[in-house]
Picture 1 (spheres, one colour):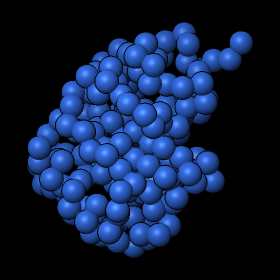
Picture 2 (cartoon, rainbow, N blue to C red):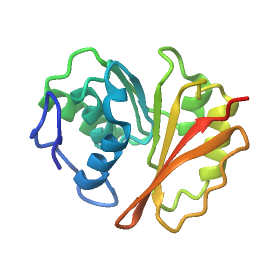
Picture 3 (cartoon, rainbow, N blue to C red):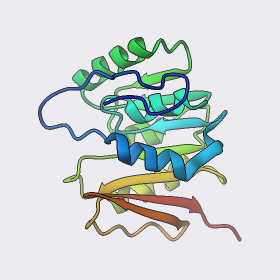
Length: 181
């Protein structure tokens, strides 16, 4: 696994073996192709960070700040190692919380992009999206991105609208925004 573009382009990231499904290079490239230049200067929440590849790709492409979160201490150590590999200084915060506790306690800066990549067996996508809105994590211009198994059924809350869906391999990226008006 490597950083695809930006300041850290080509850097190989440390990964773990076992029951971890990192977002592959091709899907990350697709994700950032959809977002385009909006990543520059943005704030990200990588809520199920794992190796930190999504947040690191965002920083590499010009994001100003990333909040990395994972419940696993091993994942936190891996994120720290990958931040070191890329030489990232001060453009991040690391949390080790259950995602719902994280959303409830989220402190500024407010994210422009919220990236959810829970384990495929997570199954609580609807609750995750609803709580992100209910706890105030989704600002008026924020984009929520959910990576899930392509056959997963997701019913976002009425306050969110689906902006785009992209399928790649066994994965699906769903992009949501708050409804206006």
